[in-house]
Length: 534
Image (cartoon, rainbow, N blue to C red; front, side, top):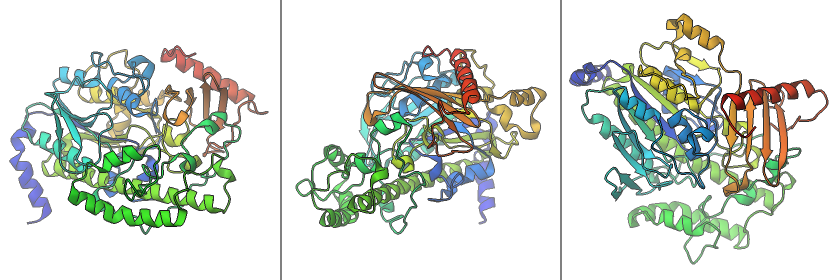
């Protein structure tokens, strides 16, 4: 039987379900630390992501999508509330507890007649509110045989790989026949550190050598805060926890994160552990034979000063291991997104569903010699955002307007026909999605679209030692202020001439007019968003 015929039969089988409501469903898929560089509809240098690309090919791809605070919990709070961190109260992971009693987009969708569900990573400490059903990972969760917290408070260990299990639970929830339109939030752990691949994917990318990004050997000249951080691949990436060079507890040198790594792979069953060790143990033995047990970390020096010596070889070796394991985790993620798309297609739901794929922030894949996120520099400020649109929304291709994760809440409410509260700071993206169906009001909204986005990062002192900072980005320039007890510096970048943000122009001759304009626009946005930092 042809595939098209099967789809028609399946759609007919579910016709009563589809006829029960006409308002679009929402399927929001969010990953952790998945960066646009590792998504082939944005960047073809590294890997292919055919299922993620399906969303963009059939819908829209935002080319200027940004977060308001490049950190997991705060980013999620911004998405749920449509407000910047200082307004929703969750500014950092170290000390934050999300106030679940406040107004949130899922609660407003419920009031509008939507059924809501959250599956996967929550990472906001408090118990989820605003969801008719939820099943979440505790804290960061685990890749292998993870624990899930259920609504009744039970902690249940499920057998399998976390990305697959989250998808299984999401599809099972959609299988329930319901009369209401629904909003399903699928929140993956992938691609969070320490990038543990599915066992079926262990051999992937082992024959691939990834090119170093052009700014890999950044010396951080003129950028004081960048030089103070601890997220360099060379000196800060743990050889056991991050690159998985582990033979056994007795045979592997102890590192700061060794015990955490042992706990993670200790969740594998004996049979699974055998498969895992069959791949990583030979690599580890070869590594220690070459480098010995005294390798430790690379010396604490600028990576730009590492020459063609033994240190340089170790630095590039760590980069390749990082890239390969990260790519394997993305591969599994891409497959599971494909399962969701196939499910919606076979059940005749694509035409009446908004599918959103994004990440809680971007990530460094060796740019500036780094891994992790946090900074307002482009790789972590920007996040992928692609959408499959309901049938009545006709826009296709790239959308270049600047958008932020505070815009998701008003967009979903607007789509549901629900009023958008005045205290929501984001704006609905629907005018950008209508294409030829755009009204005069939509066109006016597009014409007066924002010309700058505001950012504020708070978590210091903390992991990776990224200093607190705030700033704005326009289509060409970026102004950042790093502040705190040991830093008080400004940075200004011309993104057209310096896309890698290597040359701080703040205070340089000839930049006086631009600098004054950017300060004035920054103050305007701080007033608009009522940020008391000004």
